[in-house]
Image (cartoon, rainbow, N blue to C red; front, side, top):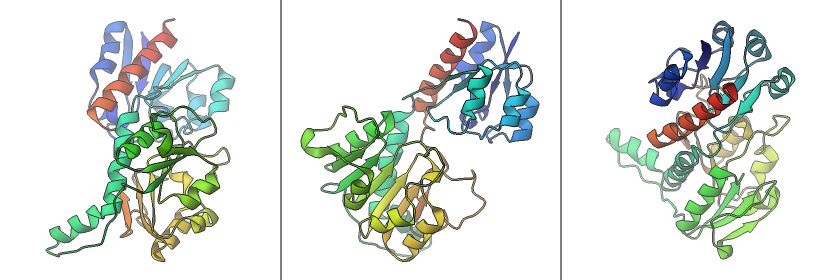
Length: 308
């Protein structure tokens, strides 16, 4: 019986019918510790004898892959793969499959929700009411604003469409520009420096840079408009955390809204605990609909790779 390891938090917390159906197709399904990212030691314990791996966003080290001598395929329940040692997978001949676009709607809608929460300072007002206070910060509207979308794949494209539908103008940046469902008079493509300089709100939907350096470093932050909002549902490493805190402390940014952290859950609250930061616990694709879509895609990708 072929052994399949399942590690995404959304699938270990509550087994999904599409995953459990693998048992009827002759697979032995093994889960990592429920609802937590498996660490290197747990992966090294679970991967020996595994031929197929339905993987999440957990960091995967060369040591873990070294323990997986029988591994033939890694099937991601999403599109990001920068948590994986790609050269080693290629060297070993291990197939890599992605559930591209399956969680686009969920992540895009969270980006919109974070943007609205930041512009209207909803968490600030909510915390005040709960504390018996009447806190008010003057907010802003999306209509008429310029939104910079960095990365225009399935998620970024949907974000651009939704912001446009709310009355924003879109500046888009992507190494491979493509057709977006946005009216021509509301969309223009630009280089990254122009986008950062001209956008009222910047939202990230791209992978990490090859060298791991942030896009939004101290210099880039200095180029943003005073009172700009930054939304990040993509990768924590896209921003320089220390420089971001400085910009928030000095009032140069209205808010930073993020769903991603270098360490999850974050041990340091220096950034997520800031009064002008809105933080969510990596829930972008954590909707019933998105989990169903990416799980079904990931399972079928895995089966095709193992039973061609």
